[in-house]
Image 1: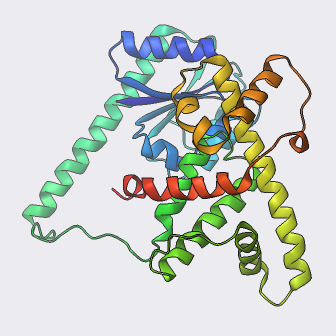
Image 2: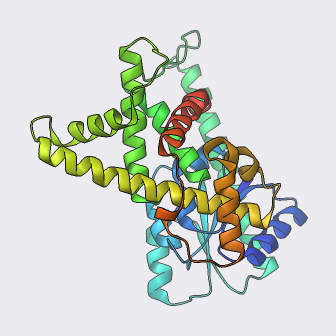
Length: 312
């Protein structure tokens, strides 16, 4: 079994990870400190079987996060120090499997995870039996090649881009929606031109996405939307810069920091942001040199490169 832990307390994340490892229940394949840092595409890509998530978190709480995970295929266990019947009922209404109260008890956590694990194994066994019966009854053509839905080829680029935006800690920013729209537009634009290497100017991309949203006849509104989108995207990119800088301060060898800091940003800006965070200095987006064009084009190229992973 593969577990993912979401809790703003690093001590709790460590404790739960140790419990899982000591009881030989499986492996912890990832952690996050807030619900805003995950979505269903990311968890499914990680092949998470069981998600352990805290109820109270600073940016997006557990219940709101679970509501956003409609297409997550695994099971969810919620952990909280709140024990009111109303809150527990609301949590179960979102579709969680179990509700564990804090402070966490080792025996209770292990018992709950064993039950969830057994339920998953039972479900997999039943599905296997059903497939076998279908084959025996002749309803499945074993020689037929597996079909793929090619009606919406943009879904691959969107899933890949969502994963990267989640990794960069910016998926909850409003500008992330603009970036996803741009990824979809660029993918279609390139397909129509048979894989042309030179991508269009950044201003043209912003304008085209705004025109697609509002209609080509309303020039004044398109101009306003273009400027607004540029500001939203810039704020979202600044959040990614801050997220990576904070990771670098905590652990300079952190995989995300090593993979993304120099890929998406000029390292001088990353280092500058790290120093600002370290010295608790007030900083503004306007004082930071953000290369929006580089970020968007790198996001697009990286998203394209990862498409195969999300279409397997």
